[in-house]
Image 1: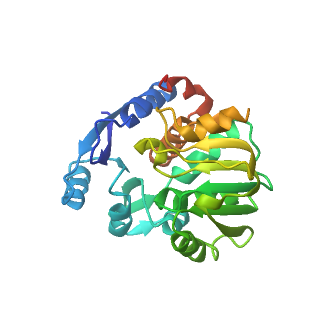
Image 2: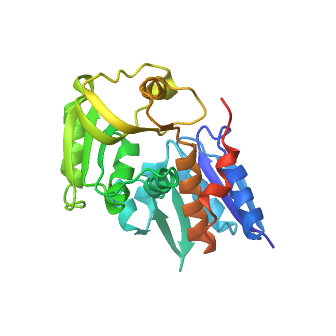
Image 3: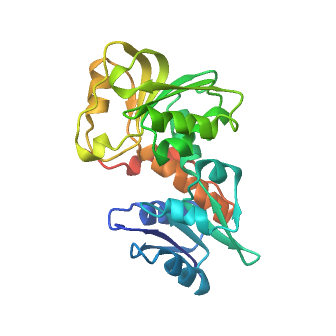
Length: 268
């Protein structure tokens, strides 16, 4: 009898989670069934309730429901509490448990590239939910300085105020997005600019050794600018695989190797 899993979102057609989880199961010898679930924008709670009521084992949550999932959980992991968003759900002793594996997925992807996070100085572009979810895992992995650049400085400052008590071993600071400067080991684009096609300008006053784009499957102006500087780059496919592996591990107790699945990346 195969265990039943799904990813829930709106829209959901584009999701590659079923492909990834079935590939993990094949590699680890497990029998699972993993489907896509389209939830109505006003019907997320009832959608997940019916999934678990019918014997479902675990759910991944994608846009725009991660904050709602957080609110519905009875038990949260530390990283989910800090992220205030949940992308992985399961039932245990009749209680709905939630975790956020996005940040650890990013950390695993960066480490698999051979980029060191130990004592690193990182610049993150954007101050939305994606950034909130990755700061704690980046600091846990060794980052000592994280600067957050955003169009509205107040939003970046609010994020820093919310998180600094949780990451006392690192220094968090704020930069205006239109006035970037400084030296960084890694620059991470967590804005939606790549998805919307708008150009992000990386001025000569900002220097970096590596560039990571959270989005995947599209050519982004962010990565093009980094490549023009002959800087090693990566899009976010490794992060997608990494967060999926973490969820698979929570549900099944088996952790596939990230490097085995990076070949599944879409070609541009």
